[in-house]
Image (tube, rainbow, N blue to C red; front, side, top):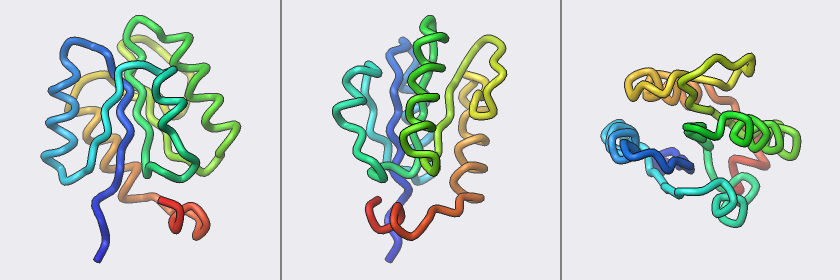
Length: 120
């Protein structure tokens, strides 16, 4: 039996409960955390199917955090919610419906290597 995909959601915005609820309603298991620094200690390689970072007012810090994840574990799925412009392929709108669509797309089209799949 397959377990629901696990999402680490790093989000300290006032409306984060909307994103959490929307993702849970789609059947995802969501592990919310407020700060990127806190997430670093919780984020085990291969522990999550997807990491979502809501950039909020910390666009530069969030971009650097996502780039670090991609560099350290290139197969890790990452999305960054941003209200502004970003040249990163993992950047999505911070709108709840846009995020849900991007998450659905990332996880449904995912081809995770066997070593990460067994660690997840």
